Length: 71
Length: 492
Image (cartoon, rainbow over all chains, first blue to last red; front, side, top):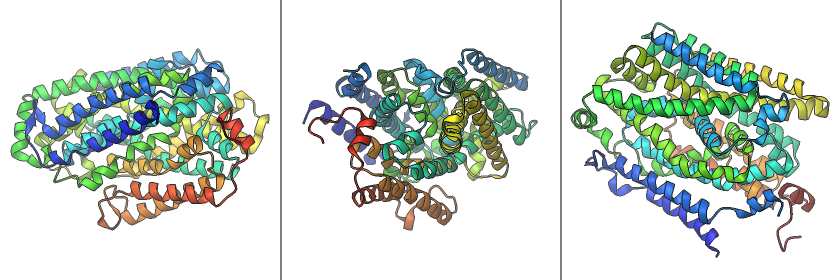
């Protein structure tokens, strides 16, 4: 499987799994001044940005760029 | 003073919109798609502004008031993942086929892909029906906001009417070009003012740590998720943001992009933009329990504006209220423009006058339809007492359940018109049945299973697409070649 296909499949699945942070479900403690469940999802959002940067850099559908330029 | 500030803001918005109108080339493609000339930053701002509605500010804070911190993860961080993926996998390809084949609407794309007028008509009806609750929350949000920031001096029916009239004016005059410019302006306004609102209100309440300490005493259940978010509900709610794949107004913005690489900034920056808007809204919604305890159901729709009214008087209240209006109007404008485009292109021009309708008449017919739909939404807003979050969830459920359509159209060459029609009918009938059975309650799950309606409908519509396609004749290679361009290597 090419790197592009691998990234396009694995990155979304990993992030989807991490979105379900069941281990923090009943935890109402604070981390960095916010409830830990909220802090986790802020960090998760930052990770999502990094993941999207990875996708557009290494898994971009180049055939669409090619089609646009007529190649 | 508050009213003066709000009136000045509306005047500014109209000014930006009407200025953009001066660049209008009076052609259909310029009115509906800004001549496919939108660059990276404006695409990000206009897509984000279009997407963030009364739901993002009033709905999120209202829901957080009742359910706590989990609202951010439930909708915001899930959207930060799912929506950029929708843009990456579907938006870019839709842009490419749209540019190649000259599409202006979604219905044109799907109708042409599968060669079916019946599908086009069915899809038009379903998309308009699903969009009306979405329009409704915008008009309701405008009415609630103006009523609250003027301490009840302006009735909600007046606020809703003013919002509808302002939007109607700049959309009717400048089309997508006005909408994109105004959205960019309004997005920057509501992001900046949202942060300012948060800073001022939390400061006047004794700081964020003081607020959290107060909540730990009064409402500790709001600081965790186990009391309000069953895990299966949480998991299946992740499907709700997939509705972005079928929003007519987002689709139209996709088609307006200058080139496919224009999407890159939007895909990377979208999660950050969502967080900037949702974090203050969710935290202020939760904090509202300290100042306004005991609100029931849809009463919490106005909690954000009530907090502004209590802690930020006069000019500041007007400015912060303008931020809320910015969020409301930046979606309403694109939604009504999309409706006008769809009606003009997919009904009047395609089924009525075909190629005998010139550009001037196309634009005029679009404007008349826009006025009619906005009027209907306004009337409905006067008789609806539901929560904004709940109404939006039902609307999004229907759109998300239509996901098999763009996926099959863009990735599965074997899919057929029969499969597409079966899929849309499954969504239409299923949605109505579930809505009736649930009594409109967005948190209802079939059989008390904890699995949201969106998951059931999406599964059913996917099965309908696959079965309907496999049981009917495959599309012709000629149609596929025309839609996709060159055939893939090894096919034929």
